[in-house]
Length: 140
Image (cartoon, rainbow, N blue to C red):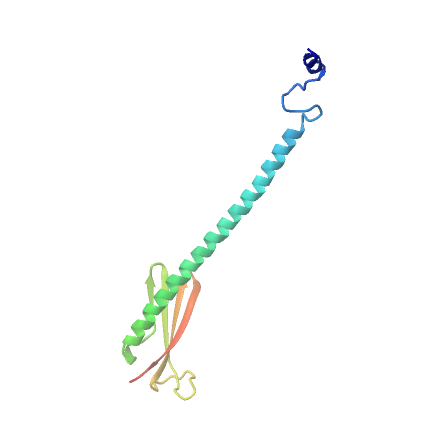
């Protein structure tokens, strides 16, 4: 009997689980938790955008390197006189070959053929230079 008298004297809160004076604290806690999750979400999405941009740039550079290697291999296998200036469009990339005569002693450009050419291969995409490579072609 004594237990029922003590239980009757304890003042009950109008909402179960809350003590008196805590009515607005739960809303504030939920708002703070949502704000923290929002900041974390924005940071995650920002990192995702940067990662996508880096992956795209890396893919473009890899493709440019592959196109440049293929063009240099073609130049290596071609005859001395057949290596001339040209531009080729492949997969949205422009492969530009610039061949100029150079002096074998000084490696400076000359207007006349002296048995050496400096060949520059430039790979562009949408007007942006991605890769420039150079090689020397010797008449044999």
